[in-house]
Figure 1 (cartoon, rainbow, N blue to C red):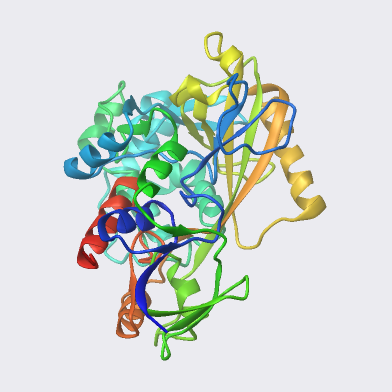
Figure 2 (cartoon, rainbow, N blue to C red):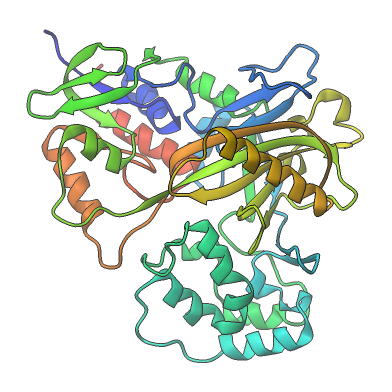
Length: 433
């Protein structure tokens, strides 16, 4: 039986690795892109379309909500732009307090001028105090960085939702998402400060993420419908859900690190780090009377339990049916909720209805034309304080001929551009000709 090195997963990391290496890719789904995939739904229907209809009368959505290209090496961005045209956008986002109907520009701590004066004064005094020396958990870091007033108002309830209740146990991470700079905080207490953060500007493919995935896939041999179920790392064989098996020389894996250990029967010495899933409900609707111009809203409390609302059409009107792109009388929205177990059947249908009802109560949407839930099993990856599990797991897989690349395989947050970079790097290292 002839053996070769193969790539697992045709998300953007796996596609980039295939582009650079010429190695075959095995993908569980029936199309390229992984979670970075666009699809289309006509108003009033439930059928997902892989490509836009000829008349353009469909909402464009994405698996797992909006995926935007931020940061990234100029060489990688240049590579992507040679594949598909990219558009550049400036971030517009806010924290939304639904009980008050109050919008505070993001990041919250830099826009105290938009809070009640007494709250702003108290928060400013707390943030200028020396931070405690001992910071172990994400909750500790939030309290030390932002003080009790802002934590009680926003950071604690939001992160409780965002981490599915883990924020009091896991290590701090992703601090760049909400940077703390006292000079900017003080300036923002008296008026709008300069924009800061990791995504002040971002890019998106003009024809959609599906077009980028197809362009990346064009140079690769991809075997679709190949969901891996079991790996024997000693014999270097794997089995797919369709009953077929494959003997390999080496694996280049983009699959979640925890899943690879489970399928291969390997275990790191340390306790496994946690993750949370995300349920994203894509919503196509008539524009509501109080619809936001923000591209996304961070929500500390919602009756349905979601923590973020994103507006595809506030980024680009091409996410709307063609007849609404000029008037903007519709909205294309994604609503995120972190969970530890999936909702199914009636519970899922009831939740989708709850989301639609709450958005209508807030005035963000009118009549709802599409409600389409998507699920990502490993969406947010976390670490226990002081954990060595990630490094142990990656090294253990490598010792058994499995190279972990990309966001989920290496258990770290990164965007599309960095994931493509990882794929190109790994692909070049495995180039066969």
